[in-house]
Image (cartoon, rainbow, N blue to C red):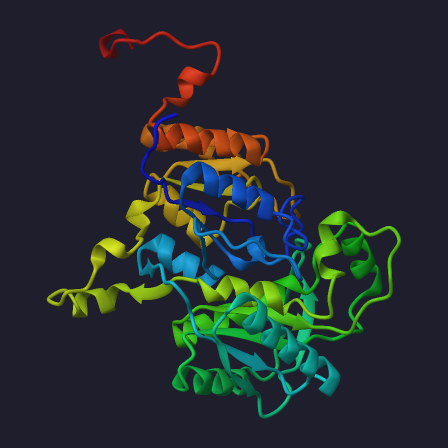
Length: 370
């Protein structure tokens, strides 16, 4: 097949909803790699790319925090690919000395072995205090008891020159043992994932720079029935390394208002990604109610709905997408898995009519025959 221009594609697998693919420890990375190869440019978020101790850097993948994705999809933010970010490290004062030291050693290792630009390092003035909760839908969430403390430390990192921030907060070890066991064995929701998203959303909203979170946890006892999808969390003492790798190449966030202020300068608009560049958005069936997805539907961006079960049930049927007519209906495609989704993206990228790949093929009808 001849070379074609990249088709920027948005891959969304929401955090903390227990999807079969992407609900565990970086188990959506193979799907992301496949879609990146098919599209030539994949925009996705930490829940997809963070695999505990495992990660996969790819020049075709843009690592964008979830709140930023919403702003990007709505047109409020442009993405500016970068060669390297200077990643500040924000540590919770609630981390025990040994656990704190292990995270610092991971950062040192990423500098020494991967060549990342990490620093400065800041510890909060007191413990942040994280509470874990579960919604009625079964999805995980939570709250921060000391958000102002977290924000003050993050602001100091930004003032000291950090262009992205990796956050490590101490999570409670006394979380529901049954929930944790079910998750580790591949039958439950990641109970800590929801509040991780709360933390990163909060900081990005306030600071307007890339941020992502790694939980600080004591090691768990060995589980002989561990699901392979959670095994990336068993390799080391921290989950920080995948966050540092992702943030090291995360694109800058350029707000529309900033663009207007620079419209008379030599600002390189052609290097930016905007929602107008999007050629497709890939999202699990049942998770269609998010801001980014709704923004893409409003803009007639092709929506590829993948069978990827989670605890949410905001489906195409409940959204009445199947009853749409005109251009909207033509832009809604279905895939049984991410292999099929990659095929659809390849067809879109190379301007192949998807109808020509399916059987039977309906004959053309004249408008005046209807």
